[in-house]
Length: 119
Figure 1 (cartoon, rainbow, N blue to C red):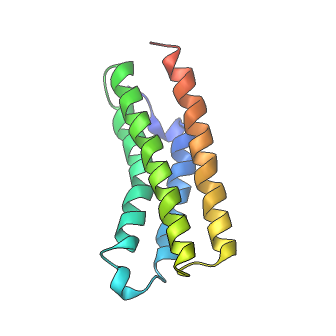
Figure 2: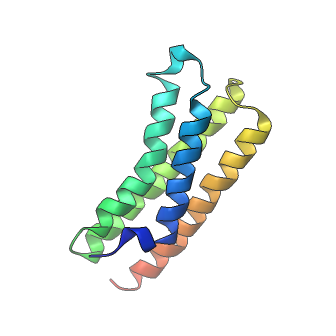
């Protein structure tokens, strides 16, 4: 068992999820069950998968959840792009979110490589 709160990628993902929740609060109400929901789910799924995987017994299981977290980060990055294209967020907010999720992805990729050495 690992303490997920000590995993840097989890901390970055948690901060990203909070930022997404704050920015999507201003999305159009007709997007509540569409893009708003999808972006929020993808954002919190990153840290949720890391924390769930950390509770798994084997390193192989942990890696599977880290891979899912990485996929969720990619999905969230696309939804941020789409939100910008639809003018739900401005370029400055998009760049900030893109940088945040990029940092999460980069950190996750490094962490995955490190954990893979234990297999």
